[in-house]
Image (cartoon, rainbow, N blue to C red; front, side, top):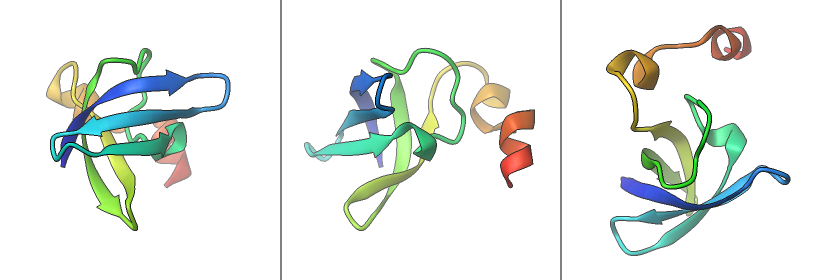
Length: 77
């Protein structure tokens, strides 16, 4: 599913995605696969599991920044 991050509170690490299906989904920053700076207003692609967005991918930058793995993410896997 696709949408856009419309709210994000850095201090608590949670935000809201407005999806193309008209629904709003709350998410945790830890669910973002490719965190990279500013989140507000960024288009995203994500899966919905138990009415929660998971595997959130920020759709900005080059394909390498979207789908490439950073050292921090590689260490968690």
